Image 1: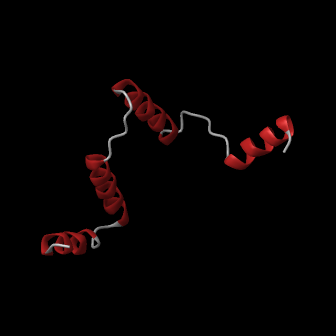
Image 2 (image 1 turned 45 degrees about the vertical axis):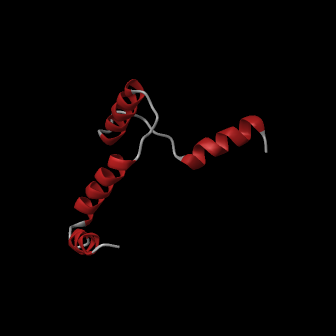
Length: 74
């Protein structure tokens, strides 16, 4: 690894957790190509905002699995 990388990493690790998370997401998005159309990207963002804003009803994984099990069996 380069010295620049090492310095950036050291600096980044001093950030608060929330800022490190935002930085990691930003870096990931800069190299990750989702292959999704812009319309799907927009829809995903809309749904995430609804969940984060408390406007969408979510169902816990355990409940979903229990309902599937009850409906379709093991």
